[in-house]
Length: 203
Image (cartoon, rainbow, N blue to C red):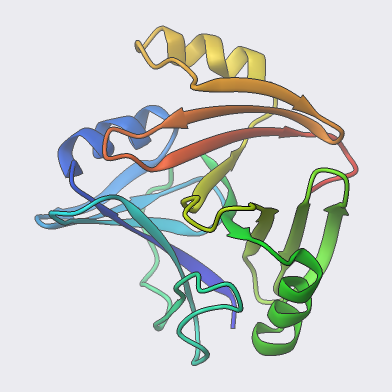
């Protein structure tokens, strides 16, 4: 039951397409209200134009629960057909907000077959992977109104921030964490995007 796709509902399809292409995705298909973007590695991104706010939902192969222990929505579908071209982006995975991190870790291991590969209790961050591919990040959030985020792996967060600044894309915040450095951005449609430069202890 690997994670193969991240479905993004967005009110700003055209603007988000440009944003994610700057981040390193390759446009594979565009037939409004849908678009398919391919990274260099990790799950692909499927955008759908909607009238409401942005929402990110992981899509797994197989069948399973429609939401996790904390109410984060989950989807299931066969993997999409292979793409001819790929971008440069390295998708780390969806970052899902949770209140009870230990219980959520156990839930994903039991129901979806994911195994913990990294955790940092002090900051409330844990990463799980599936043997068939795909990583899910669980992040402690005292308020479950916190939206899911898209995390992209980068080699040098500071250099990437400077590159994006040349495209007039400015970070919402930057910070250091015990396992690396992060820079947060907001896609035009409202999705939070996290650039993550991880040390060897994570990923």
